[in-house]
Amino acid sequence: MFLIFSFFLISSLSFSILILFLFKSRSSSSKSHKNLPPSPPRLPLIGNMHQLGSSPHRALQAMAQSYGQLMLLHLGTVPVLVASSADVAQEILKTHDLIFSNRPKTNINNKLTYGLKDIAFSQYGEYWRQVKSIAVLHILTNKRVQSYRQVRKEEASLLIEKIQETHESMVNLTELLISLTNNVTCRVALGRTYDGKKFKNLLERFLELLGSFSVGSYIPFLTWVDWLSGLERRADDVAKEFNEFLEGVIEEHINKKLVDVQGQDIVDILLEIQRDNTMGFHLERDEIKAIIMDIFGGGTDTTFTNLEWVISELLRHPKAMKKLQQEVREIGHGRTMITEEDLGKMPYLKAVLKENLRLHPPFPLLVPHESTHDVKLLGYDVAAGTQVIINAWAIGRDGSTWTKPNEFQPERFLNSPINYQGFHFELIPFGAGRRGCPAIQFAMVINELVLANLVYKFDLALAQGECLDMSETSGLTAHKKFPLLVAATPCE
Image 1 (spheres, rainbow, N blue to C red):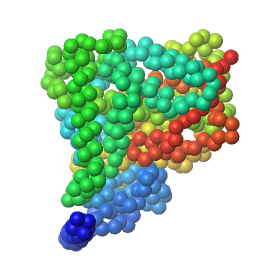
Image 2 (cartoon, rainbow, N blue to C red):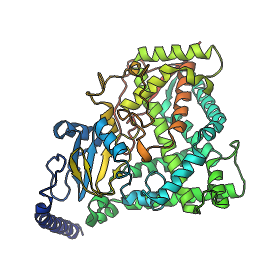
Image 3 (cartoon, rainbow, N blue to C red):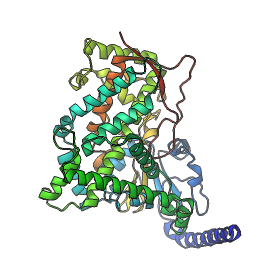
Image 4 (cartoon, rainbow, N blue to C red):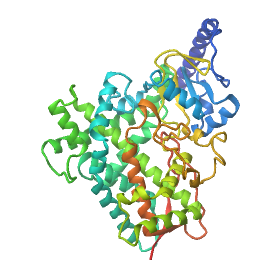
């Protein structure tokens, strides 16, 4: 069996290389007049795949040092444009925003999002405009975000209580932050919390698959490799489990059972839009489920990742930690907790979070874009159907933009107009333009409230003699590789 498989694999690769060589020979003359962006040498069949490694954002930053702020890679048969500076990002996400407004189709995302029916990965067009309008006008308005204030307060209080119960012993802060963000998102989106471990495992598998590399999406005639590796089976399993879970949630809401959030949760809102046809189009059940999955993918993973990284940076920089504590405690005046009304009075808190997002954007390469038409970009020819990667991680560490770019210096954002809303392209952790993240406010108010209360209530430190490992995981989201273990001493 192994010999048969080996022969088939070698034959397939040999035939593929021959076809690609012939195609390249025929097309080279037609491309000779094109002014293409600089490209590193590539291998037959796989192109530049082998150069990405386990940390693509770091590898691409290193390649940009040689090939420039705009370079063209080839991942299998797919041309991929990589932007590594604020100027190029602005050209793509503002000047030519409409042309680069599409998302590439991948086999795994297609399985996980009901045929790309969510907001993040759906193809640009009328359907995307409809679901984006639901998010902007009904789910993520300022009034709606404020309506969930009590949920955030209760979950932040619960986090504090759990830490206090450890009586100053080592606390797995990563685990507690995941629990907090899961609970907030569950209550806001679904109306109540769900079985922690089971739901956490399902969500982890879902996010891991979203960040996985599908060979068949880049070399279509090798789609069988994804099947052989088990990638497609795992995607089918997770999609089935998530679908069963969300079906149960929707039935609970239809039958008005077990809902504890005050006012409407997101499932209520979506069902109301479906029932009353308030948006002027019919919202299908699978589309409702796809939108809910977006809320979880973006709402939980990025939020706890931000908190984990920012606390890690503060532990590494005691002066910044002390300065933040002083600001928070002056505002708190000995009260039980910091409230959301207090957050607007804390410029250093906001500067700390901006600096963390500069160094540790949750999605280092953002969500890929795709060009819908041929376009001239900085004098180079870019063909329709080219995938586009914005290296937000590299942009945040660009020495031509930032002084001492690899150092954690929150003070750089004090009295600075730069923010992360998508208007300043040197800091775009949530993307920009029409495909930018619509949930920035929802995510950041949780980050601000939780961080403020953690440093208000506790002195956080590493165990004596311990060194903080800042290694990253690979995938769509860059998590800390190892859990964040801290000693939390209650403040007097």
